Image (tube, rainbow, N blue to C red; front, side, top):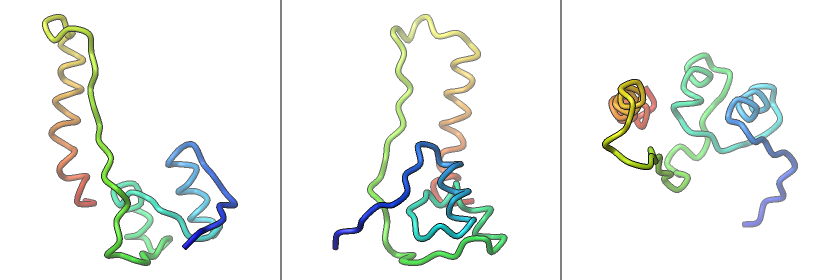
Amino acid sequence: MQVKTVFRANTSDALLQALESGIGIGGMQRPLAARALRAGRLVPILADWRLPDRFLYAVYPDARFIPPRVRSVIALIEARLPELAVGS
């Protein structure tokens, strides 16, 4: 089925705001929409359908010289991603 797109957003926040204001139907990652879903501002449709998986990479020039604060951020992301993936 071809769908004519009438709205595009380059940030998840802009898309979420548009969806919450009633612009129409949109695809959104469940973790980003979880609060609006719990509050009833959004309702899930096609709940069994999924967008293709996306991957997140941390790219840096040489692993030997990563500052401790960068290592901390990477560790935090690695620790939080599994719980975000299930929409908690």
